[in-house]
Image 1 (cartoon, rainbow, N blue to C red):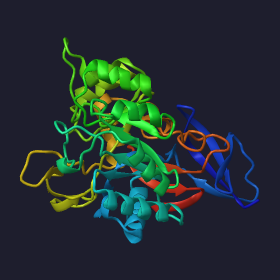
Image 2 (cartoon, rainbow, N blue to C red):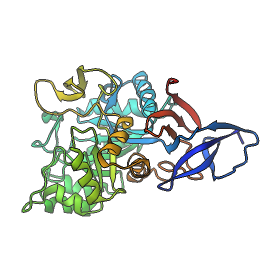
Image 3 (cartoon, rainbow, N blue to C red):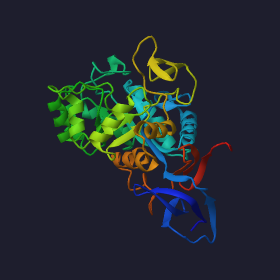
Image 4 (spheres, rainbow, N blue to C red):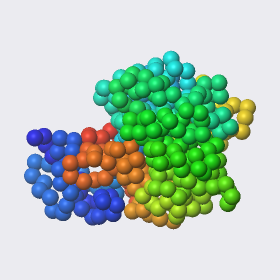
Length: 386
C-alpha cells in the first residue's frame, strides 16, 4: 500500500454537504473521510480553511485552449487535458460535433488513443456524439448537409470503433427513424434530446423510449407555449436531466433560477459546450468545419448571429451559478460534480468525496477560485501563488 495523503484543515463537500473534516487518500482512491484521522506516514495537505470538492465533470465540451476535438490529435488532447485541470475539471466527455463519417471515426480514434494513455490533467471519460441525427430547423452550428435520419447501424459502427466508449449521444426525436433508434439503443449509451423541433407528444414518447437528458436546455429547440408545451414542456415535467450553459449569454440568470426551481437542484447539470476559444482572447477560430468569430467572449459562426458553442469554463460557471442564484457552494457544487456523474453513470467512482471513489479533487477558495486540482491522488494543477 502506497504512502497516504491526508487533506486536512478545510471544508469538504461530501454527501451534498460542506463538512469540516479530513480526507485520507491511498493508491489514488479515497480511503477514509472523517475527523482526527491517523496521520502517521502520510503526506499532509493543509487546506487552510479552503473547500475540498470533487473534481468538476464536463459532459459537453468541444474543446478549449486552441484545441477543437473534431480535429484534435494526441498532443492537442494532452494540451486540452492540462487546460481543463486549470479550470478545476478532472473528467470530461469529448464532444464530437456532427461531421463526415470519416472525420468522426478519425476523431473517435484519436480520443480513444488518448484515453488509453496517461493524462497530464483531466481524464477523458468517453465520447459524446452531438448528432448527426438532428433536425434542420434547429441545426445551430451543425453543418446542414451532414444531418441524417435515425440510423442505429451507424451508431453501432461508431460504438464498435470506440470500443464501447461512446457514453452519451444527442438526438432529435422527431427526425425520421430516431424514435425506433432510441428504442434499439436503450442501454447502449445515455441518450439526450437536443437540436430538436419535437412537439410535446413526440418528446414524451422519446422519454418513454429511453431518453434521459436534454442537451443545452432552452437552446436550439422548440420552446414552451401554453397550447404547445413542446420539448421544454416535456423535459420540465419529466424526471430527465437538463444541461445548462451558465455563461449569462445562452441563459438569462432568471432562466437558470426558473430551471432549478422546476427541476430541482439534483436534475440540472452545468456544462460549458465550450469550443476551442475557451481560455483564449477574441479572434477567429473553428468549431468542427465551421469558422467562428469570437467577440467579447461570444462565439458565433462567422458572418452570422448563430452561436457556436461557448467560451465558458466550469471554473467560471461555478461562480456564475452562485451569483445567478445567490447560493453558496453547498448548493451549487453538485451541479458540476454529483449530477453529471449520475447522468453518465460515473457516480460509482466520481462526483462525491466518499470512501472507495477516485481521489479526484478541486481545492476552491471561499470565493470559488480554483487553487489546486488533483487527479487520482496526484496534483495536476496549482494556481500561481498570490
